[in-house]
Length: 169
Image: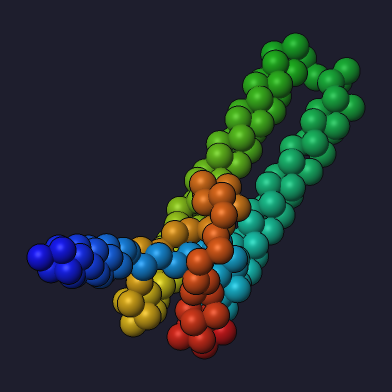
């Protein structure tokens, strides 16, 4: 009877350990920001955004230069103009400054919208590829190990090489 109890306890422990091992989730990690920055589509999107920003910067610089030239001309001619004419010119310069400010704000807003438009497909491609590779490798969870995301230590399996291979990077 004592041997039977020992055998029963051994079987129970074995079953418990097996159940515990099967209940464990497989977890991997990947630095998504690093992955995204290495994707060719991200680099192309950033180049396109940089060109657009340079275009806006050039246009704003030209507008400011033109306004400064007008202001210098008006200042030089101020002695020969009436007070009413000088006041009208001052109002015109203020309106020009407001227009430049509004254009700058509009350009920033358009630039942000373009960034969202260009990066959404890149981020979605990265996410779906990570998900696909993780499922193929049998992982239940994938943590983002990008610095500052809350993962303190990531010694588990790193999916970076597998995802880069799948993306052709």
